[in-house]
Image (cartoon, rainbow, N blue to C red; front, side, top):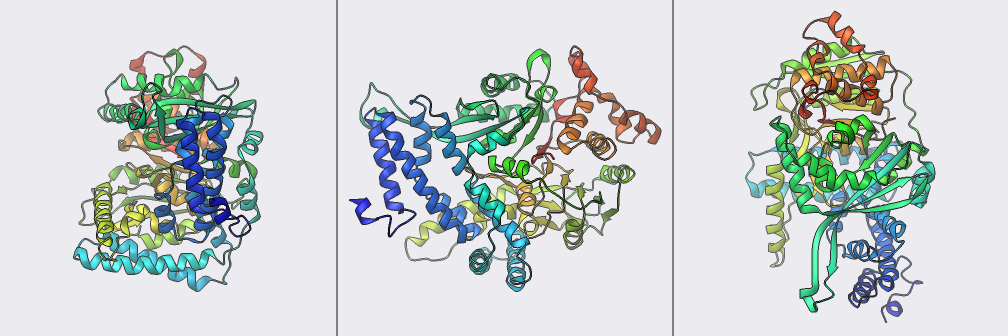
Amino acid sequence: MSRRIYPPDRFSDGHPVLAVILGNLGGAVAAMGDYAGSMPYHEQSLAMIHRLNRRMTATASEAEALAFLQTQPHTFHGLLSFSLLVPDTAAAAYGAVWSHKAAVSRVLEQRHAAARVAGTDHAATFNRLREVRREIDRLLQDRRLPPGDRDRKLAASADERDRLERALANVLPVLKKWQELDASGPETLVSALPREAVLIDVIRYVRFERDPTMKGRAAEKQAYAYAAFVLAASQPIRRIELGEAKPIDQLVARWRTAIAARADDPAAGRLRDLVWSPLAKHLPAGVTTIYLSPDGDLARMPWAALPAAGGRVLLEEYALTVVPHARFVLHALNYPRVGAASDSALLVGGLDYGATEWPTLPGTMAEVKSLAALTPGRRETLSRAGASTDRLAQLLPGVRYAHLATHGYFDSATLSAEKSRAAAAMKERQFGDDARLVAPKNPLGFTGLVLADGEIMTGLRLVDLSLENLKLVTLSACETGLGDLTGGEGVQGLQRAFHLAGCPNVVASLWKVSDAATAALMAKFYHEMWVNKKEPIEALRTAQLTIYHHPELIPDLSGVRGAPKAKEALAVSPLAALQTPAKPRTARADTKLWAAFVLSGAGQ
């Protein structure tokens, strides 16, 4: 009946009601024990949902697209759950993940890329949109306004922002490479992957289970779980269930607490057993590079420091990098970035934060000076009161490398409070109050970089920059890798903002690191990249292994003992240590000192 009401000749992409009915029908068939029979209904429903989502998000504002995600039916979770009970469905299940994961981020990546090549035809609209975003950015940080006035101004600015974003979405050009990426499937990435590389794609989903010995609601169980898919050129797609998410998330939090205290904890070994060991069984021989697309709290876990065989850590076995989603890897492999020939660099450190709550970071000035000596091309340096948001926004688009040694900003408490206020406002709307809160729909407004005089450059400001000339930005600061976790969209943090602005590689930290350890790690990282001509993924690996195997070199590498000692330390290679038996534990650096920094991007 619904197919007759919503025929394809009138509804070419389908209809939301029909998509829900198909998903419900698949669930009903599964409830009767016919899991294989439920699969076609779930697949039809999910394909229709993706077509409808694509049409909606193509012309929606970012706030509308993120909000729209929260209204989606559970078809995706049903397909992943019931396909577990049907043999040979790993590829079909991953097809759903391929389309579902980071759906809004992928649309925004295309939209921002199109905006950067749109020329001057729509310059006035773009400029007004940037002004409105900056006004929202300012209002989000202004605690002096009464809440009612602030909310009304935010709502008015958000309405204008949404209108401008919709207008631009309708006129931006569609780039050929994005059309090709949209038409690609997992098999395209499998064929593009080098034989020495694999992608491990993790998804956190609601797993539905039924107890066949019980009836009705009592037979149903729902719990968040982690699943991982391994893609490699030499084998079919593999699916690995990692188990319920709650105990894994608790172990991640416990391990991070132990790392902060520089203490040993069995949580690391348990995470190895629960997360890594099941995955390792499905890696083909000869793999040296792993692209990780984590989800949930696994995005906050230092994968490189996981215990491995023979008393080693995972970084000793593989080069690791994190990617936002699978198509990000395909984009990097099929469309290598061509930037400016000059290895110009922007170095930011030694800032004057004025009379604010942000403490000075005296070690960052020494860090910047040591890197200045390594810079192979043109160099710009911002320090003290000169490192303003406007000056940074002016210089970033014109350089190849950017090293930003300053505080990271993530106001999780205010973001949480704004979400609660938004939930309360939604209830009020049921009684005729049309006021709405926009802050929770803009998570990038709650994360950023602290600059001169305590001024904050948030992710909302960064995404409006054109940073395609940048090859790498390093956020050499405390907890710059954190942000809000939006279901299926990954961490809404600075890495995402820089990626949306066009920068392919971002190095950020998961926790607070000492000045000396950070300066030492960065000196070795840039030496490997600029002097030894390594790509970012290998340069960071070498730097981290150097600190791990040679903590005694931290004073030399950080420049505390002067240039002669630093030069000797830079020449040390940790790779020879990988060919010898593991050193005693006392000879290695604590995880806190070397594993905080994570590369987001393909590493090229």
